[in-house]
Image 1 (tube, rainbow over the protein chains, first blue to last red):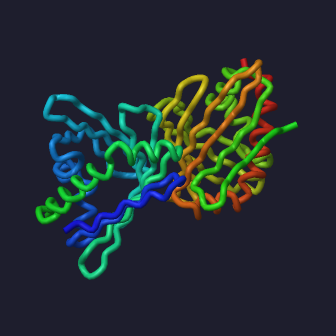
Image 2: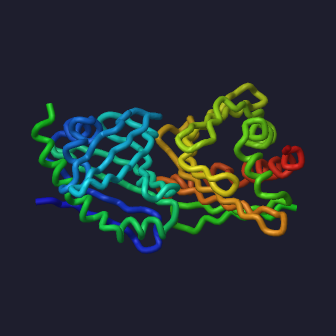
Image 3: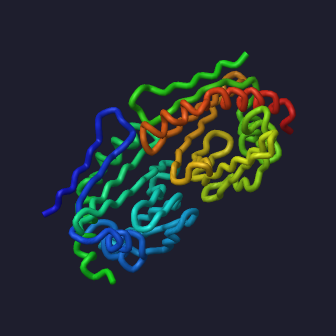
Length: 157
Length: 157
């Protein structure tokens, strides 16, 4: 059962996402930042995610490509601005189909009784950009990704 | 006379700054993005700004150091996410004294009758971060910088 919540107050610039995972924080952090795990949960279920670059350190950059069953490719990239293992990272996120539109995402992991609470706050350049992201079906894709991440956790070593 | 406006609605993540300049847009853009001009207007009046790095292109990074009269140094850095000369750039902004706190700034320049309207929208990770920036005396420093930029424009070639 997923306890995913997606909160987007009307007229605000941000989207707040929370979800808990039944694993210690260092395991969740590893799965969220190491390429071999990222490739297995990031993106939609029906697509294959190729990790082009994943320099998960402050000042590093990442680029992932989602390859759809019809062969179409969708690129995403960003820059890591801060990373404090295993509790926090700050990064930008851009879809290459809409250049110039950038989102700034802060992820926090808190551990309690062996479980980990994931909280992500994404801020957008405009409220319209934020609303566009919501309307693009983000919640559907996010749910798939988070569920896939949940499945990957047991394999993290 | 400066027509600087700084708008920060209560409870929002953003600060919107506007100002007009009596110069064509390509001149303002140059002064805002080329190191030799940046060093002359960026930062407080009483400090010296040293341009450590200014890769003003998408994916490039910048780092400026403000040197106060007492010798104290304050570092700032960011990443350029988008740049469309002479109309627009998107960058992050971090003060090295508060690591992990990142602001995402979108700057637009519009030209009308030979004058240029500068609009900057900065979004912060939290409303508290945004309010902290306002309380730090940002408007005072911004006014000084923008007035200095105004003075630099006549020298742009």
